[in-house]
Image 1 (tube, rainbow, N blue to C red):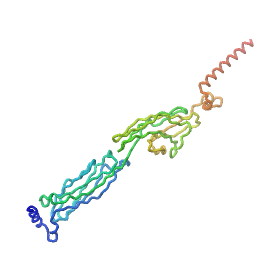
Image 2: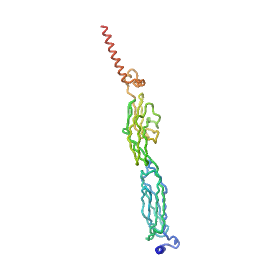
Image 3: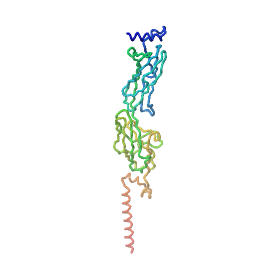
Image 4: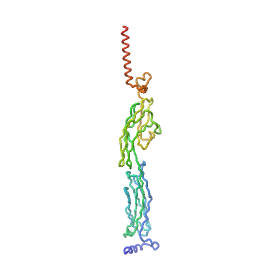
Length: 310
């Protein structure tokens, strides 16, 4: 009581009669934001978030104010204390450092302000603590990208297409994603039904994301049709299971893919094509063996005919 009486008498020296009722110290705290939503999955997200706050002192004497920032798992910085003149206000900023590894949930940030002294006299035991609550929502995200082992892949019709793709992901949740290959024709706007003869025969590839990231080298092997007459031009696009259909070769990170028609063989000399023989399960080797036998018999026949004429 003695301290309070002494303090009151000191303060009254600075207080005009119209404001005599505002003797005890106090401060008002107000901030610009009470909620923040963070999505690390966006193409560009800020590394920090700022909150502007104001301390208002409606008392007629100077107050020293202690500031504190309380939040679990989120790093927050700001001034530790400020002096506010009587009848004045002071602005300050609170800086929130963002970590892309934060789990998807809502975090609470409590900003507090307390008058610890007035006109140089300790006052913490007489004042209330002002609070401002900010809710920070972290959205679940998963970002992935792919790097191909080559810039283009060219094979002959009927030949298997083989390539490797490195799949790298970053996420704030642990998960496993199946990685798949898509085939898109040149100048098409999206992936359509695959032509007959194109089939994936490689084993399943998955990327496991733990503690923020995941990486996997995936090998893909496809069959190609053996009887195409015109060159196939398109691209191969590697995506994870979240996207069922690929876009165009220009809009996706893609690998150029070309299938050349098989070169003309022996049958072309008589107006045929080897691919026709394959439709009847006749191989090129069989054609060559049959041709060799036919040639040998022809030579033997000519020798016998000439011998008989003698």
